[in-house]
Image (cartoon, rainbow over all chains, first blue to last red; front, side, top):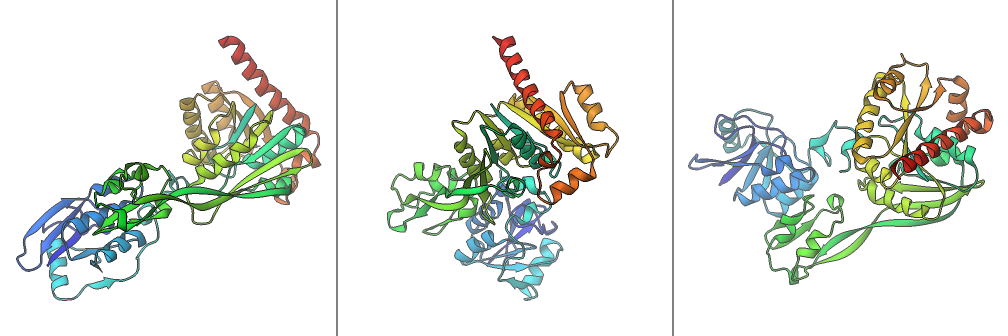
Length: 130
Length: 285
């Protein structure tokens, strides 16, 4: 199965980016062959709805599951509708996360870990509408 | 003449000044509370409400039977309010800005237009002052839609006061749209000056003439006045940091009604703005 991981870089050594919608890359690993492919997250620059767009990118990679740090309700809905399971990791490198996933040590995300506009937290009132 | 009262920073006294101006001018005045995320002019004006109606925004609804799976609606949506998952199109209403692009590009018409309520407009009067208030529903984000609805209420009024939201983002731009002049209510503090400077930049881009009313003057170190002098910005009035004004306003009274010596000062601000605008018209003619 292919596993998508929200990451700060493009390879096995890259660290987890805990933000789902605005991570730099999705590193997609084949959990059987160990093959790795990076897909840039074009949703990262979106003014709004980054999570929804990012979720479609992940679906488009053909991944069967996702590992990230935080994910909001909209993105989670898209992934669930597409039949993808999501898992949470606290941090670490891509290769460590794949290992943790394979050994069943990652917890599945069934509820959003953050509210709407999670990635915009702290940007104040002006950020609410654009 | 339509005058916006704006600030950059929140809590500087926009509503206090808007209500004071409306109270002092009295007749043929309409006060538009465009701070639709937290409208509060009514707390000072105590209007008798006569009418209330909903504000809607268009949203697409999806009919799977007519969809050809082209995905065009998803790719044209600038707000990522649509997602295509397999044969299904998901619509995220909260993110939709109602631009209509998805409907326009959906040639098989699998998307059709529906409406949902996001806020309301209330109209009433307080003495001779007409008061219009916009109110955005909890959890909604499209403040500009409600602000535009409020502003449609002022067609025939000769003196319009727009109580603007704080900040410099979309709601403020919507509140400033079409105004003849903007009064910046500035608080004499570091934050007050910083946020006022951001608004000054906006007003210069929009080419809206403006002047400053310093509120809580004496609170700080005159940095707002020094900035205005340096930039050649007109200072229309200074309202002191005064316990009586604070006490009256905090209890929901118009300070101009209880301290009537302020009414002529408010009327003078209005005439000065009229003077500035007629001067500008004459010089450009």
